[in-house]
Image (cartoon, rainbow, N blue to C red; front, side):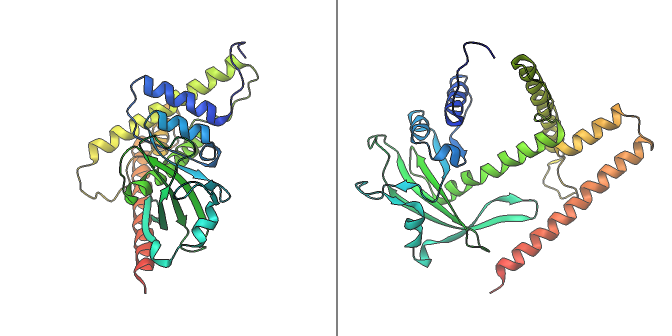
Length: 273
Protein backbone atom coordinates (compact mmCIF):
# COMPACT_ATOMS: atom_id res chain seq x y z
CA UNK A 1 0.00 0.00 0.00
CA UNK A 2 1.39 3.45 -0.88
CA UNK A 3 2.82 5.39 2.05
CA UNK A 4 0.54 8.37 1.50
CA UNK A 5 -2.66 6.38 2.10
CA UNK A 6 -4.01 6.44 5.65
CA UNK A 7 -6.79 4.52 7.35
CA UNK A 8 -10.29 5.97 6.98
CA UNK A 9 -13.69 4.79 8.16
CA UNK A 10 -16.45 3.92 5.72
CA UNK A 11 -18.20 7.23 6.30
CA UNK A 12 -14.93 9.14 5.81
CA UNK A 13 -14.26 7.31 2.55
CA UNK A 14 -17.80 8.06 1.38
CA UNK A 15 -17.40 11.74 2.25
CA UNK A 16 -14.17 11.94 0.23
CA UNK A 17 -15.77 10.18 -2.75
CA UNK A 18 -18.83 12.45 -2.68
CA UNK A 19 -16.65 15.56 -2.55
CA UNK A 20 -14.55 14.31 -5.47
CA UNK A 21 -17.65 13.51 -7.53
CA UNK A 22 -19.26 16.90 -6.91
CA UNK A 23 -16.00 18.73 -7.62
CA UNK A 24 -15.78 16.83 -10.91
CA UNK A 25 -19.17 18.19 -11.94
CA UNK A 26 -21.32 15.14 -11.25
CA UNK A 27 -24.93 16.25 -10.91
CA UNK A 28 -26.57 14.92 -7.74
CA UNK A 29 -29.41 16.10 -5.56
CA UNK A 30 -29.75 13.29 -3.02
CA UNK A 31 -27.77 10.76 -1.05
CA UNK A 32 -29.05 7.49 0.42
CA UNK A 33 -27.13 5.10 2.64
CA UNK A 34 -27.43 2.50 5.39
CA UNK A 35 -26.88 2.79 9.14
CA UNK A 36 -23.09 2.72 8.90
CA UNK A 37 -23.30 6.18 7.36
CA UNK A 38 -26.57 7.51 8.78
CA UNK A 39 -25.45 7.15 12.39
CA UNK A 40 -22.46 9.42 11.73
CA UNK A 41 -23.29 13.04 12.57
CA UNK A 42 -20.05 14.12 10.86
CA UNK A 43 -21.12 12.46 7.61
CA UNK A 44 -24.58 14.03 7.78
CA UNK A 45 -23.02 17.44 8.37
CA UNK A 46 -20.71 16.88 5.39
CA UNK A 47 -23.69 16.29 3.10
CA UNK A 48 -25.43 19.41 4.38
CA UNK A 49 -22.33 21.49 3.70
CA UNK A 50 -22.61 20.41 0.07
CA UNK A 51 -26.36 21.21 0.10
CA UNK A 52 -26.99 17.58 -0.76
CA UNK A 53 -30.32 16.24 0.46
CA UNK A 54 -30.25 12.85 2.14
CA UNK A 55 -32.30 9.94 3.41
CA UNK A 56 -29.96 7.95 5.65
CA UNK A 57 -30.91 4.84 7.60
CA UNK A 58 -30.25 5.01 11.34
CA UNK A 59 -30.55 2.48 14.16
CA UNK A 60 -33.69 2.17 16.27
CA UNK A 61 -31.67 3.46 19.25
CA UNK A 62 -30.62 6.57 17.34
CA UNK A 63 -31.35 9.72 19.32
CA UNK A 64 -33.30 12.44 17.55
CA UNK A 65 -33.92 16.00 18.75
CA UNK A 66 -37.62 16.76 18.20
CA UNK A 67 -39.09 20.27 18.25
CA UNK A 68 -36.68 22.58 20.07
CA UNK A 69 -33.96 19.95 20.30
CA UNK A 70 -33.41 20.39 24.04
CA UNK A 71 -34.31 16.76 24.78
CA UNK A 72 -33.39 13.80 22.58
CA UNK A 73 -35.44 10.61 22.35
CA UNK A 74 -34.86 7.24 20.71
CA UNK A 75 -36.22 6.78 17.22
CA UNK A 76 -38.26 3.71 18.23
CA UNK A 77 -39.86 5.62 21.12
CA UNK A 78 -40.87 8.39 18.73
CA UNK A 79 -42.53 5.79 16.50
CA UNK A 80 -44.36 4.12 19.38
CA UNK A 81 -46.41 7.22 20.12
CA UNK A 82 -47.71 7.75 16.59
CA UNK A 83 -51.47 7.42 15.93
CA UNK A 84 -52.80 5.17 13.17
CA UNK A 85 -53.60 8.23 11.06
CA UNK A 86 -49.89 9.08 10.87
CA UNK A 87 -49.14 6.12 8.59
CA UNK A 88 -49.48 6.15 4.80
CA UNK A 89 -49.02 3.16 2.51
CA UNK A 90 -46.69 3.92 -0.37
CA UNK A 91 -44.41 2.04 -2.75
CA UNK A 92 -40.70 2.66 -2.28
CA UNK A 93 -39.86 1.27 -5.71
CA UNK A 94 -40.89 -1.32 -8.28
CA UNK A 95 -39.57 -4.79 -7.53
CA UNK A 96 -39.46 -7.89 -9.70
CA UNK A 97 -42.39 -9.33 -7.71
CA UNK A 98 -44.48 -6.19 -7.45
CA UNK A 99 -44.36 -2.74 -5.89
CA UNK A 100 -42.42 -2.58 -2.63
CA UNK A 101 -45.27 -1.40 -0.44
CA UNK A 102 -44.66 -0.23 3.12
CA UNK A 103 -46.41 1.95 5.66
CA UNK A 104 -44.60 5.26 6.17
CA UNK A 105 -44.72 7.91 8.88
CA UNK A 106 -42.96 11.25 8.68
CA UNK A 107 -41.96 13.45 11.61
CA UNK A 108 -41.05 16.80 10.12
CA UNK A 109 -40.45 18.61 13.42
CA UNK A 110 -36.90 17.45 14.01
CA UNK A 111 -34.03 19.82 14.67
CA UNK A 112 -30.46 19.45 13.50
CA UNK A 113 -27.47 18.06 15.38
CA UNK A 114 -25.49 21.23 16.10
CA UNK A 115 -25.93 23.71 13.25
CA UNK A 116 -29.47 25.14 13.44
CA UNK A 117 -28.71 27.79 10.83
CA UNK A 118 -28.07 25.36 7.96
CA UNK A 119 -31.18 26.65 6.21
CA UNK A 120 -32.60 23.20 5.47
CA UNK A 121 -35.37 21.02 6.84
CA UNK A 122 -34.71 18.05 9.12
CA UNK A 123 -37.10 15.16 9.64
CA UNK A 124 -37.38 11.52 10.66
CA UNK A 125 -38.86 8.99 8.23
CA UNK A 126 -40.20 5.70 9.61
CA UNK A 127 -40.92 2.63 7.49
CA UNK A 128 -43.12 -0.22 8.70
CA UNK A 129 -43.33 -3.66 7.08
CA UNK A 130 -46.95 -4.36 6.19
CA UNK A 131 -46.61 -8.04 7.13
CA UNK A 132 -44.25 -8.25 10.10
CA UNK A 133 -44.58 -4.73 11.48
CA UNK A 134 -40.79 -4.37 11.56
CA UNK A 135 -39.66 -0.75 11.66
CA UNK A 136 -36.82 1.03 9.89
CA UNK A 137 -35.74 4.61 10.55
CA UNK A 138 -34.20 7.33 8.38
CA UNK A 139 -32.72 10.72 9.20
CA UNK A 140 -33.70 13.10 6.40
CA UNK A 141 -32.63 16.56 5.33
CA UNK A 142 -33.41 18.71 2.32
CA UNK A 143 -32.25 22.22 1.44
CA UNK A 144 -35.81 23.17 0.48
CA UNK A 145 -39.36 21.98 1.27
CA UNK A 146 -39.86 18.38 0.17
CA UNK A 147 -42.82 16.00 0.10
CA UNK A 148 -43.16 12.62 1.77
CA UNK A 149 -43.35 11.00 -1.68
CA UNK A 150 -39.92 12.36 -2.55
CA UNK A 151 -38.34 11.06 0.66
CA UNK A 152 -39.90 7.63 0.08
CA UNK A 153 -38.55 7.59 -3.47
CA UNK A 154 -35.03 8.40 -2.28
CA UNK A 155 -35.25 5.74 0.44
CA UNK A 156 -36.12 3.23 -2.28
CA UNK A 157 -32.98 4.09 -4.26
CA UNK A 158 -30.99 1.91 -1.89
CA UNK A 159 -32.60 -1.20 -3.39
CA UNK A 160 -31.16 -0.24 -6.76
CA UNK A 161 -27.73 0.14 -5.18
CA UNK A 162 -27.94 -3.24 -3.44
CA UNK A 163 -29.15 -4.91 -6.64
CA UNK A 164 -26.23 -3.36 -8.52
CA UNK A 165 -23.81 -4.80 -5.95
CA UNK A 166 -25.31 -8.27 -6.33
CA UNK A 167 -25.24 -8.01 -10.13
CA UNK A 168 -21.59 -6.95 -10.05
CA UNK A 169 -20.61 -9.85 -7.78
CA UNK A 170 -22.48 -12.35 -9.93
CA UNK A 171 -21.34 -11.13 -13.36
CA UNK A 172 -17.83 -9.66 -13.05
CA UNK A 173 -16.68 -10.95 -9.65
CA UNK A 174 -15.02 -7.91 -8.03
CA UNK A 175 -14.85 -9.93 -4.80
CA UNK A 176 -13.27 -13.00 -6.43
CA UNK A 177 -9.68 -11.78 -6.57
CA UNK A 178 -6.81 -13.75 -5.02
CA UNK A 179 -4.25 -10.98 -4.87
CA UNK A 180 -2.31 -9.70 -1.88
CA UNK A 181 -0.65 -6.52 -3.12
CA UNK A 182 -2.21 -3.08 -3.41
CA UNK A 183 -1.34 -2.61 -7.09
CA UNK A 184 -2.72 -6.02 -8.05
CA UNK A 185 -5.94 -5.43 -6.14
CA UNK A 186 -6.33 -1.97 -7.67
CA UNK A 187 -5.87 -3.29 -11.21
CA UNK A 188 -8.25 -6.21 -10.69
CA UNK A 189 -10.98 -4.04 -9.17
CA UNK A 190 -10.63 -1.41 -11.90
CA UNK A 191 -10.92 -4.01 -14.67
CA UNK A 192 -13.93 -5.64 -12.98
CA UNK A 193 -15.75 -2.31 -12.69
CA UNK A 194 -14.85 -1.43 -16.28
CA UNK A 195 -16.37 -4.74 -17.43
CA UNK A 196 -19.50 -4.01 -15.41
CA UNK A 197 -19.73 -0.56 -17.00
CA UNK A 198 -19.60 -2.11 -20.49
CA UNK A 199 -22.39 -4.55 -19.62
CA UNK A 200 -24.51 -1.80 -18.06
CA UNK A 201 -24.08 0.49 -21.08
CA UNK A 202 -25.04 -2.32 -23.47
CA UNK A 203 -28.14 -3.10 -21.40
CA UNK A 204 -29.13 0.59 -21.26
CA UNK A 205 -28.63 1.04 -25.01
CA UNK A 206 -30.74 -2.04 -25.74
CA UNK A 207 -33.49 -0.79 -23.44
CA UNK A 208 -33.51 2.69 -25.01
CA UNK A 209 -33.88 1.31 -28.55
CA UNK A 210 -36.89 -0.87 -27.63
CA UNK A 211 -38.62 1.38 -25.09
CA UNK A 212 -41.36 2.86 -27.30
CA UNK A 213 -44.18 2.41 -24.80
CA UNK A 214 -45.38 -0.88 -26.25
CA UNK A 215 -45.56 -4.09 -24.23
CA UNK A 216 -43.63 -6.64 -26.28
CA UNK A 217 -43.99 -9.34 -23.63
CA UNK A 218 -40.32 -9.26 -22.65
CA UNK A 219 -38.50 -7.74 -19.71
CA UNK A 220 -35.92 -5.10 -20.54
CA UNK A 221 -32.45 -6.28 -21.41
CA UNK A 222 -30.48 -6.83 -18.22
CA UNK A 223 -26.78 -6.94 -17.40
CA UNK A 224 -27.12 -10.68 -16.78
CA UNK A 225 -28.67 -11.26 -20.20
CA UNK A 226 -26.09 -9.11 -21.98
CA UNK A 227 -23.31 -11.19 -20.49
CA UNK A 228 -25.00 -14.42 -21.62
CA UNK A 229 -25.26 -13.07 -25.16
CA UNK A 230 -21.61 -11.96 -25.16
CA UNK A 231 -20.62 -15.44 -23.99
CA UNK A 232 -22.31 -16.82 -27.11
CA UNK A 233 -19.88 -14.83 -29.25
CA UNK A 234 -16.83 -15.88 -27.22
CA UNK A 235 -17.56 -19.49 -26.29
CA UNK A 236 -18.53 -21.70 -29.19
CA UNK A 237 -21.92 -23.13 -28.17
CA UNK A 238 -23.06 -26.67 -28.79
CA UNK A 239 -26.25 -25.33 -30.35
CA UNK A 240 -26.36 -22.71 -33.06
CA UNK A 241 -26.63 -18.95 -32.62
CA UNK A 242 -30.31 -18.91 -33.61
CA UNK A 243 -31.10 -21.43 -30.88
CA UNK A 244 -29.27 -19.37 -28.25
CA UNK A 245 -31.02 -16.16 -29.28
CA UNK A 246 -34.38 -17.94 -29.17
CA UNK A 247 -33.53 -19.22 -25.68
CA UNK A 248 -32.67 -15.67 -24.59
CA UNK A 249 -36.01 -14.38 -25.87
CA UNK A 250 -37.91 -17.21 -24.17
CA UNK A 251 -36.18 -16.52 -20.87
CA UNK A 252 -37.02 -12.81 -20.97
CA UNK A 253 -40.61 -13.59 -21.97
CA UNK A 254 -40.95 -16.05 -19.08
CA UNK A 255 -39.56 -13.47 -16.65
CA UNK A 256 -42.01 -10.85 -17.96
CA UNK A 257 -44.95 -13.20 -17.42
CA UNK A 258 -43.75 -14.05 -13.92
CA UNK A 259 -43.39 -10.36 -13.10
CA UNK A 260 -46.94 -9.60 -14.29
CA UNK A 261 -48.28 -12.46 -12.18
CA UNK A 262 -46.41 -11.26 -9.10
CA UNK A 263 -47.65 -7.70 -9.59
CA UNK A 264 -51.26 -8.87 -10.05
CA UNK A 265 -51.10 -11.00 -6.91
CA UNK A 266 -49.52 -8.21 -4.85
CA UNK A 267 -52.09 -5.63 -5.97
CA UNK A 268 -54.99 -8.02 -5.36
CA UNK A 269 -53.77 -8.57 -1.81
CA UNK A 270 -53.61 -4.82 -1.25
CA UNK A 271 -57.17 -4.33 -2.54
CA UNK A 272 -58.65 -6.98 -0.26
CA UNK A 273 -60.63 -5.50 2.66
